[in-house]
Length: 208
Image (cartoon, rainbow, N blue to C red; front, side, top):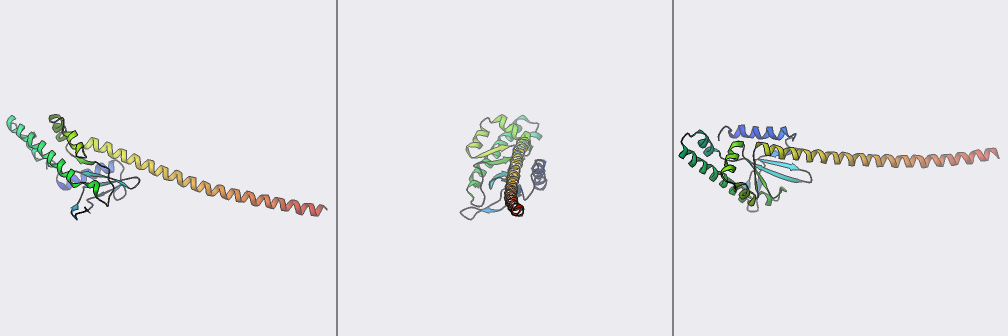
């Protein structure tokens, strides 16, 4: 659809993830397959790993065919029809995403919301400008509409969370090592005091 084939789209999304300093198979995985309680297979595009074993779902299977017709048409009536179809297409995908209920999958722990990525930023902007309630409609279905800029900002926040998590682990590791070192110093000091006391006893006996 419109500028992005499936393969190029995946590369583009992966570049956004890597630009936010997120590493594949560490901070995110692609096309993971999960089955719901009814045994139906669900394959989100990207699963973002968060600290404390939480996850964030990104889906980008958005059709932009109607938007392509809207931008390429020079006839006002056809543009109006294409814009209407574009809005209908987005609403349909919002509804489909909501029905998948990724948050109910037992194999992953997700927040209540799924990020619906629209890769062509003007495609999302024109939809929001012509339907003021679209964003809230999506939120009501636990779907957050994101474009390139807002997704990148979200991923940067995730990257910051991981940095803080790693720093916390490093601080805890340093504190643990420092505790062990302190215990060793205490033991050494106790031993030196014992040796000193023994030397005093030996010196006293010698003087006597």
